[in-house]
Image (tube, rainbow, N blue to C red; front, side, top):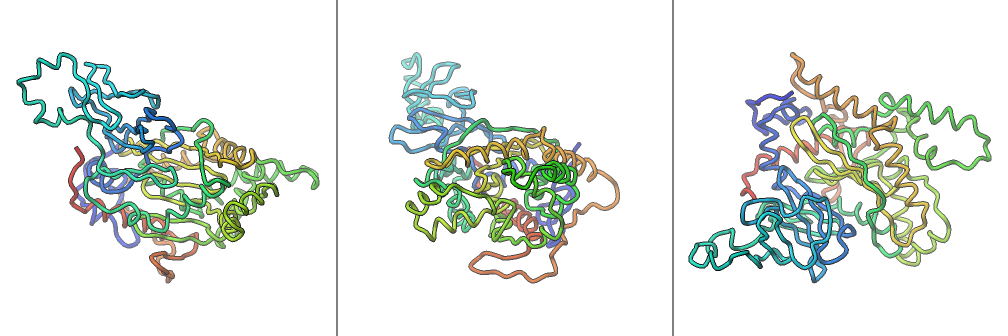
Length: 440
């Protein structure tokens, strides 16, 4: 259920609270689709999904259908997935290979891989028309800007706007941290992804990613179950990956209050940088040696010792260097969102890393897991509860009175502070308010 809002973005977000219309209003969601997601940089694909010329993936971003295509020179271009003729999607499959030519199934208009119009049936019948003067005669439309960083492909839909590195800043180090877990610095999308549609506003999911206070109560049953099962085993028993990943959910407030966080401009953050539930993972010695030889001892140590609980590149992805997983968040409507859980393989790394990634996604992010099931229930409960009369505001007051240390545009704070959420909403309000040209 949703409603119209009399508020503007500037009145929805205050220093320590957010008005419920940020989650409930159809008008606000329409403005997000048109303005916010066009002005910010969003993840669309990983280069390993399209290794050969003509390979493509399709997706919808903020209501726009996109087509990501590997070019003949190995570069990557992103177009609107719309034939210049009648507007039909060029491709409806999630991925495939178009060969040397992109062709529409409706009237067989064809395009080069770079989007230029190449062939039209009955071309002579257009000879005296104005086609060459119109956008339809110019071929496919590229998105405003594309950037590929460590094989992660991002787009900004607007023609003009903030640059890629200015937008992400220090948060890009966490993509480096993932890629450098490979001795050759390369990641590949690995295994099948997990998708789930949740009946809540997309911003709730990002808040929860940065919330270290909820696991004690929300996931109490999952933690107790893991603790009870492992407690029955002999001390000499090797710890299975599933237990290694589930036991941290039995941690109490004393553990989570020790976590730190780094908060960056434009909504990005890293939670539990100094240590997290993933910091203690063990690795084979031959892998440690290969990583040291490839990156040097200091870099190898830095990569493996820094394994944040969640690193957010707002507003589309959250990554974990260990265990090499990523969540992609896509809004579908004001009260529906799609969450995708991806696994990566670090090229040249042992199978243990791949197994950890696959296991973690199944145990924690699958909608059938005892962890995600708890979260989804509460997300949908919040979406419904916000419709109640009375208090129209969502509290983000935790940690708001404490001083936070800022160094080089990075703010350091406790991992239990809601500064991470406040930072997301401040960025949201900023880009919602900016007047930017609409993408074609």
